Length: 28
View 1 (cartoon, one colour):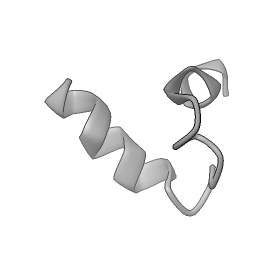
View 2: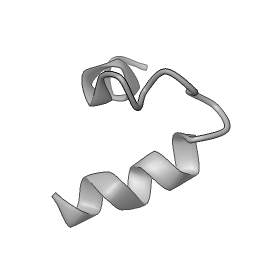
View 3: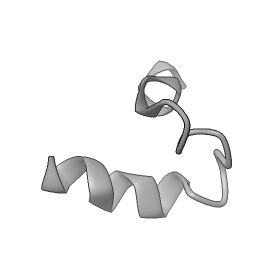
View 4: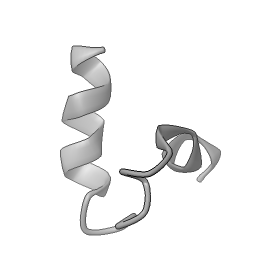
């Protein structure tokens, strides 16, 4: 899960809603 957190920070500015669903980030 720690890996997910690292990616979240990278996509944070790119995907503001990825916080609602991490799957959204993976989809992109």
